[in-house]
View: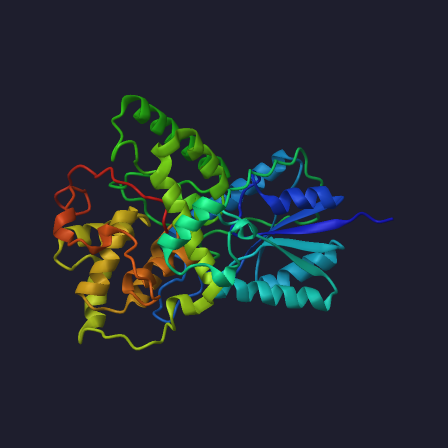
Length: 431
């Protein structure tokens, strides 16, 4: 009797710890075939000519995939790497390695779900099943106190009911060993040039360098909670004991899971409430996309009440040439590093939408290109929320309604020629 082989298709779940599809495949199959596919779709130019994925995010992704391969090798396995359309690559590998079933984590945004459907259709022709798992949220869909179709559209109501009536599942165990079939060609990690991008230049003003991968994610998580532990003991943390976790880049591609972060937060009681709130916002946006699909952000082609010179204003916003120091500093930092703190994301988005009256979808697309921690549901959900097009009644953050002059901060990015100290306000895990 031949061995049973399951292909594990990694996408935005680039980790070994708390990874249900990997553990389930190890338990259900004799051999596991881990695969990551670089889809050219995500590296093609957009209609504006800009890359869909910028160099900083692409480099972070390459580092994460390389780290996943290294970690899998530590468990006796190997990661197969391919470049191409997953609807072609996955079936080809399934046939070559006599795969019995394919596992992957389900996505919610339309581009990602369309790709899944194409892969599923191609596998179905081979009489193979693509099994879907839920693994990107803090609360599991099956544990919500309501079916997806009845999830409250109000975040406040959603939060109240979920926290009262639901529990976060424990993290799943890590496999002891992963057996793989004999692999003839594991494939090489592509270069940025092969993906059509150039090497990003690290700006010396950047407060952080984000290294992709589960290894760096775990280091950052332990670093944050060590700092939180010290702050709790000394009672000198920012906003009580809350300060930046800077975990969002790793959360965005699943180098670490929201559940892992949640169970660490639980050790600190109310001192981790703000970080927990941000994780819940991430859940909310994903569930809203699951419930409404593209309707959650309305049609992207919907006519907006734009300023007569909206295109010019948009370009000045992108370049950090609005004349408002905080706005310009945040955009300079975004362009130079691929990252800005969540507070400033709310401010620059609100300024583009409410003051400049420019096209919010273009702002969201620009964030998609630039942000290291881009996540479709969080990014488009945040922008639609600020633009007021998804029928949200309450403001996501009071910060988004304040005028920029109330939030002035010293930063090296205010003026290229007059650097000063970098503000230590950080990200709140919202891409």
